[in-house]
Image (cartoon, rainbow, N blue to C red; front, side):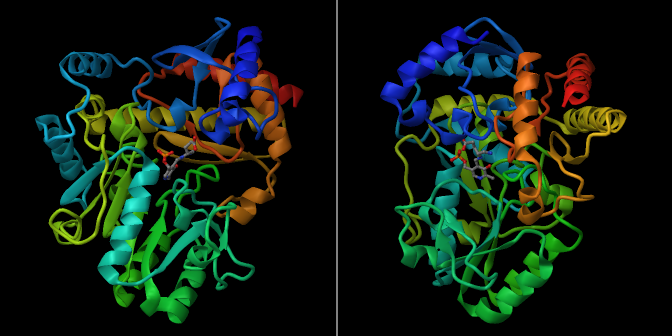
Length: 426
Ligand code: KE4
């Protein structure tokens, strides 16, 4: 079944820490050893042993139009024959910048980088530089990449200073980050009452996607906007996952709340390494070389990745999202029906293009505390059973499932049939 993957993994373990270049891929969340993939086509992945899967990981989000999307392949191939990088300005950078600025409501200017982590790391420095303040507020269960200031877990009490979430993060730096419960409006009001004048920025996933999919409750994003404005802090929407995923203008368009700064990644690179951060011209012009706040990158805006991102984003319009939303609803309704049929307690959260289901009897999952009560062992069993059926979900109960423009009801029906068989036996 996975003989060649298992052999490759043994070799990988000798060369790469944990055999992977990013921890979540090691299957630690579900047990077993990772599958090595060889190719992808539309909604399908093919592994080293020739097994075919219907994929819902989408490389953690970027594959919004599925694998080997022809316009992206064409654009990247053509650009590769010209040059992959100049380290100098080129027109395709302007094309993509213009597309981002004209699609995302709050953007006037944008700076390209090479990952979501680089985008959030840079935007935090920008916010601190602009406000001349050091404190950052984030939310427990939200993930913003692995920059030191963001690898911070909540202190013992909601208003206690942050603690490093990893060895190597200086305690002094971690203490500058406060981590609050997601969707907790009161906690936000309290933290601003206590620290308001010291808070440089609040960074939030406007729809949480790293503790499964958790949409904002009514008034949560609006309260962040009110409190940050009132206290001279900046509001940062980390739309690395939601940008161009849930709507052309991202979650800020969907919920009509305008952040001061936005980070992007994943989809905007079309599957190549791209991150970006942007906001008003006034704020962004504080960046070097015109402003004093330094930020840089050898391959930032490289024409190869710009060509890939531009080709993918150019294929998106409101009709695309209408269809994606409909297919996501068809899928999640189908899962609800199958779970009911087999009396399996399941809670599903979904927005256009992304969703997650939690094995739990809780009526809602709207913060990390709820997520911790869910049955991740049952998810692990589910994951491997579905893998045997040729369905690839995220190897972690804390991630989202993604539907793409290449999935059709044919693949969804096959997946629902697999759900029926697996949930029956769970
Ligand atoms: P990257 O540095 O991995 O490109 O982006 C970091 C990041 C920032 N913000 C949000 C909202 C994100 O979801 C991410 C990365 N997401 C994870 C899992 N959802 C990527 C997978 C991985 O860590 O390998």
